[in-house]
Length: 171
Image (cartoon, rainbow, N blue to C red):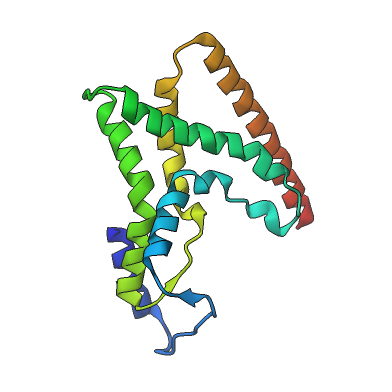
């Protein structure tokens, strides 16, 4: 939030005009929107599909959806299962709290500072993906689960590389 506040205060200093252009995407920040932001902050960064503009294929969603469920299960499961300890407790609780509050907090800051609001895309929460996957890793206890996770990670990596090559070839 501090970075957003600084950005929204410094950015107008570089403007060449006082005219603010409405891009036609303004909306109001309602309680329903705050709840949507809370829910999209948990799995939305993973299932956000930037490829949707290139193709109507449901394949990216189908490949990434299991990862979002693992993310949710890992964070919720870790909060429920692990006792507080100084080794993992801060990471687990910080990830759970940030997953639920980071996007709504950003939406509120934008709304208060600019007197306008736009629907925040779920990709704004992408910085939480590594923490969520780390917490998920705390939950993996047996060799079979670890091997399945490694295989799935390999599939995701191959899909990501092929998607990047495909999109790169389109330009």
